[in-house]
Structures are given as C-alpha cells and as structure tokens.
Amino acid sequence: MNTVLIIYPHWVPANLAGVQRPRLIGNYLKGFGWKPLLLTVKSEYYEERLDPLMEKTASEDIEVVFTKAYKVFKPRIVGDIGLRAFPFLKKEALRICKERKIDFIWIPIPSFYTAILGRLLYNKTKIPYGIDYIDPWVRDITNQNNLRAKLSQVVAKTLEPFAVKKAALITGVSTPYYQSVLDRNFKVKPVHAGMPYGFDPNDHKIHLNDIQYPWDNQPDCKPWVYAGAFLPNSHLFVESFFEVIAKLRKEGDWDDKIRLYFVGTGMYPAKRITSYAKDKGIDDIVFENRERYPFLHILNFLSKADKVLLFGSTEQHYTASKTFQCLLSNRPLFSMLHNDSSAVEVIRQCNAERFLFPYKNGFTKNEIEIGVEHILKSFQQIDDWTLNLQPLDKYTSKQSAKVLAEAMDKVLLN
Image (cartoon, rainbow, N blue to C red):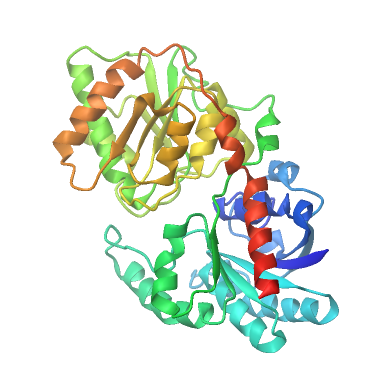
C-alpha cells in the first residue's frame, strides 16, 4: 500500500472548516490503496476553542504525527499557525521522509504558507507533492479593501508561483478554485482534479443528547437556521433577504413566530448580519452568534430547525460545501447561490430547488428582491418536503478520496 504524507497544521479536536478536508478524505483513502499519514501541530498551540466531539468523526485508519509551534505572544504579531509551525513541520516532515517510505505529499491550504513546504521537501527528497486549494490563494478582495488584505495578496502573488512550480498535482474543492493557478503558473499542466469536500454519512448518524439549542429560550418560535461562515460575497444576498422580510412584515404577510438564527458565522471583517437586520427594522427576529460551534452541534441544530437557510456567493466558483449539511438535515431549504455554482446542480439533482434563488451576473437589487419575495411567501407555508438524496452518493467524501487516490496513482505512473 502506498503512503501519502498529508501536512495540515490543524487537526481534531480543532473545529475549523479546513480540518474537515484531511479528515473527510483521510477517512476513506485506505480503501483505495493509500495509507494516510498526517503531520500536524499539537492542539496546545492552537488559538481556537477545541471541540472534543470532533474526535468521534476521525477514522483510526489515519496515523497522526504531532509537532510543536511557536506560541502566540502579546501583542499578537503572528497568528497564522502555518507560519508559527513552519520550521517544526519542515524538520519533522524531512525526518518522516527519511525514515519512512513516503510515496506522495499532499498539502491542503490554507494555511497558505504550508504550501511552500511541498517545494522545499521536493528539492530535498524528490518525493512528488500536490497542493489542494480549499480556498483560492490569489483571490478577489473587492469587499476587503483594507491594508491587511492588500498586503496578503502581494505576498500571495509572490509565494504562490514558488510553491506550485514543481507540484505534480493540483487539486481543489472544484476546478474553478484552482483553474487560475494552472493558467498563471504552468505552460504544461500538471495532473489536476476537483473534488468537493463532500460529506461523511456517518457524521449525520451521531445524535447528541442534552445540548442547548440557540432557540431554547424561545420555545414557541419557528427557528430558521443558517450555519457556517458568512462570506465576503454573501452580503448582497443577506441584505436583499432582509429587505424582503421587512416588506412582508409591513404588509402583514409574515409569520410572527419565525426567528432567524445565524450561527458560527465567524469573525468576518465586513458589515455585521445584525447591522443589516437593524437597518431593515427586523433586528428583533434576527440573532447571530459568530463563535464557532462544535461541528456535531451544527448538524443537530440543522436537523431540529423548522427550516434551513443557505447563502452562497455572487462568485460562480463558490461550491458551498455546507450544501450537503443542509440537504442531509431533511429540513425545507431556502437557498441563494450563483446560478453557475456547482452547488446549484446538487440542489436540483436532489429535487430541492423549489425554494432556490439562482443569482446571475447583472441582476439588479430590485430583480433579486422580487424573486426572493415570490419564494418566501410560499416557503413560510411549506409543510411537505421530500428529497431524493441518492444523487448525493457521488459527492460523499469516499468518492472524493477515490478521486484523490486515482490522481496520485496517475502521478506515480507518469
């Protein structure tokens, strides 16, 4: 069996979205002839709150090697764990490559700085490596027009060409996430493959007892739940959504028992969701908790919600990995996504497009609000919701692991 060294600085019990990538794929790699060996950082060096429940979701097939990192000092100058752990990850990876038979190195990003390790390790060992784009490194920062965002993009445009130049494999959560990387950096394209985060069906079989729900203090309400990070390019959708709700309330066409819960939205730098709600005069029914919730709590929140919400991005390449969580909750789904997003195809395949607003470039705000109003009037009343979840089989993390294994096999055969 071949061995793939996966380098990712966070691991369970961390509850960051990026941890899901090596976990979901690593859980199934062994079934396709690849033993996953994960190099990561000890949890004592993480800044984020830990989620011990996450350990229930990681397969014992994943061998884990831990290393250390520099601690975060005050003032907090360097927080990125990819930078704080860089020399330790490099030293430990070289030791592993020297003492073990490593056939391939796979590095999901972000943290973006760990991508550089692939090039450095290749120069020392000639072991082929691949970089996996969970998020674009060089990206659109239109809605993040600040010095820090601009500086990060200068760094990205400098370091990415070095990191990817000798990569034998480029992967990502979808092809559009890394297509520009290929176009910018390669005359002869390396092996590449797109595979979604997918989902592990076993996660959704874990039901928790004695957890607190965000709406416990409002037992008679109808909770509508949005779970997960709030994206820089989601603002247009949320603002239009709230504008329509304000209009329906004013016209007496809104169910007063509905409450909107946005949970685990993260510390995004732009305008708050609650600020949009206040602008529209509906802040009494909108609640936001930006703190990251335990992953399994989120799955249980969604399954107990009256309805679930999905706001994607105005960018067509956004794949909305949380789509699977929403569909597998088996609760009625209202979604706003770019029409060309792969998530739209997933929603349609599962017969869940009844309350989908497919955004297209050039839509005016008025056109969006007219479409959303039409959907929301009937969405409030929906009491029958039957999906066809069989099409999701091809989006499981097992299928994504198969795609990665085949891509690595192809590299070794070249």
